[in-house]
Image (cartoon, rainbow, N blue to C red; front, side, top):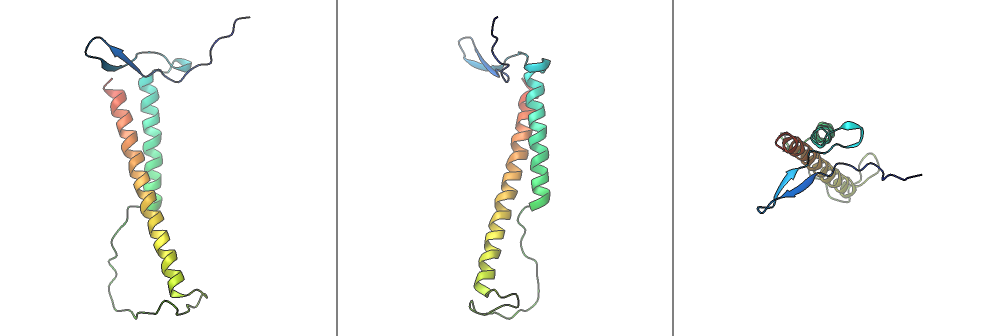
Length: 122
Protein backbone atom coordinates (compact mmCIF):
# COMPACT_ATOMS: atom_id res chain seq x y z
CA UNK A 1 0.00 0.00 0.00
CA UNK A 2 1.46 3.32 -1.06
CA UNK A 3 1.31 6.27 1.30
CA UNK A 4 0.63 9.70 -0.07
CA UNK A 5 1.68 12.95 1.49
CA UNK A 6 -1.05 14.90 3.27
CA UNK A 7 -2.47 17.82 1.30
CA UNK A 8 -0.42 20.96 1.79
CA UNK A 9 -1.67 24.49 2.00
CA UNK A 10 -0.85 26.32 -1.20
CA UNK A 11 2.74 26.46 -2.32
CA UNK A 12 2.41 30.15 -2.88
CA UNK A 13 5.62 31.49 -4.36
CA UNK A 14 7.96 30.33 -7.08
CA UNK A 15 10.96 32.02 -8.61
CA UNK A 16 11.51 32.62 -12.29
CA UNK A 17 14.49 33.22 -14.54
CA UNK A 18 17.47 35.49 -14.04
CA UNK A 19 15.58 38.49 -12.60
CA UNK A 20 14.40 36.18 -9.78
CA UNK A 21 10.87 37.52 -9.77
CA UNK A 22 8.44 36.08 -7.26
CA UNK A 23 5.21 34.95 -8.89
CA UNK A 24 2.12 33.25 -7.62
CA UNK A 25 2.20 29.59 -8.60
CA UNK A 26 -0.96 28.53 -10.35
CA UNK A 27 -1.26 25.34 -8.32
CA UNK A 28 -4.32 23.79 -6.79
CA UNK A 29 -4.85 23.50 -3.05
CA UNK A 30 -6.87 20.81 -1.37
CA UNK A 31 -10.37 20.37 -2.85
CA UNK A 32 -9.65 22.28 -6.05
CA UNK A 33 -9.26 25.71 -4.45
CA UNK A 34 -6.70 27.92 -6.17
CA UNK A 35 -4.20 29.89 -4.13
CA UNK A 36 -5.83 33.10 -5.29
CA UNK A 37 -9.15 31.93 -3.86
CA UNK A 38 -7.43 30.83 -0.65
CA UNK A 39 -5.67 34.19 -0.18
CA UNK A 40 -8.86 36.09 -1.02
CA UNK A 41 -10.85 34.06 1.50
CA UNK A 42 -8.28 34.49 4.25
CA UNK A 43 -8.16 38.21 3.51
CA UNK A 44 -11.94 38.48 3.76
CA UNK A 45 -12.00 36.60 7.07
CA UNK A 46 -9.23 38.76 8.55
CA UNK A 47 -11.03 41.89 7.40
CA UNK A 48 -14.30 40.78 8.98
CA UNK A 49 -12.62 39.90 12.29
CA UNK A 50 -10.79 43.23 12.25
CA UNK A 51 -14.01 45.16 11.67
CA UNK A 52 -15.72 43.31 14.54
CA UNK A 53 -12.83 44.16 16.86
CA UNK A 54 -12.93 47.82 15.80
CA UNK A 55 -16.72 47.84 16.29
CA UNK A 56 -16.34 46.41 19.81
CA UNK A 57 -13.37 48.46 21.00
CA UNK A 58 -13.39 51.43 18.62
CA UNK A 59 -10.45 53.70 17.97
CA UNK A 60 -9.38 55.82 20.94
CA UNK A 61 -11.29 59.07 21.01
CA UNK A 62 -10.48 62.31 22.79
CA UNK A 63 -12.62 63.26 25.73
CA UNK A 64 -15.10 66.01 24.87
CA UNK A 65 -16.53 66.26 28.38
CA UNK A 66 -17.19 69.77 29.58
CA UNK A 67 -17.95 71.16 32.97
CA UNK A 68 -16.23 71.64 36.28
CA UNK A 69 -15.37 68.81 38.61
CA UNK A 70 -13.81 68.63 42.02
CA UNK A 71 -10.39 67.02 42.33
CA UNK A 72 -10.08 64.21 44.82
CA UNK A 73 -6.89 63.00 46.47
CA UNK A 74 -5.57 59.53 45.60
CA UNK A 75 -6.46 58.18 49.05
CA UNK A 76 -10.08 59.36 48.98
CA UNK A 77 -12.50 56.42 49.23
CA UNK A 78 -15.23 56.13 46.62
CA UNK A 79 -18.77 54.83 47.29
CA UNK A 80 -17.89 51.39 45.84
CA UNK A 81 -15.04 50.91 48.37
CA UNK A 82 -12.13 51.62 46.04
CA UNK A 83 -9.84 54.59 46.40
CA UNK A 84 -9.38 57.22 43.71
CA UNK A 85 -5.88 55.86 42.94
CA UNK A 86 -7.26 52.33 42.40
CA UNK A 87 -10.01 53.69 40.17
CA UNK A 88 -7.51 55.73 38.14
CA UNK A 89 -5.20 52.73 37.62
CA UNK A 90 -8.13 50.59 36.43
CA UNK A 91 -9.22 53.31 34.01
CA UNK A 92 -5.66 53.59 32.63
CA UNK A 93 -5.46 49.81 32.14
CA UNK A 94 -8.84 49.77 30.38
CA UNK A 95 -7.82 52.69 28.13
CA UNK A 96 -4.58 50.89 27.21
CA UNK A 97 -6.48 47.67 26.43
CA UNK A 98 -8.98 49.46 24.20
CA UNK A 99 -6.19 51.29 22.38
CA UNK A 100 -4.24 48.05 21.85
CA UNK A 101 -7.27 46.12 20.60
CA UNK A 102 -8.30 48.89 18.20
CA UNK A 103 -4.80 48.81 16.71
CA UNK A 104 -5.02 45.01 16.36
CA UNK A 105 -8.36 45.40 14.56
CA UNK A 106 -6.94 47.98 12.17
CA UNK A 107 -3.92 45.77 11.43
CA UNK A 108 -6.19 42.78 10.68
CA UNK A 109 -8.22 44.87 8.25
CA UNK A 110 -5.03 46.13 6.58
CA UNK A 111 -3.55 42.61 6.31
CA UNK A 112 -6.88 41.28 4.97
CA UNK A 113 -7.03 43.94 2.26
CA UNK A 114 -3.37 43.31 1.40
CA UNK A 115 -4.02 39.58 0.93
CA UNK A 116 -7.01 40.32 -1.27
CA UNK A 117 -4.96 42.74 -3.35
CA UNK A 118 -2.16 40.20 -3.66
CA UNK A 119 -4.62 37.52 -4.75
CA UNK A 120 -6.14 39.84 -7.34
CA UNK A 121 -2.88 40.91 -8.97
CA UNK A 122 -1.13 37.56 -9.16
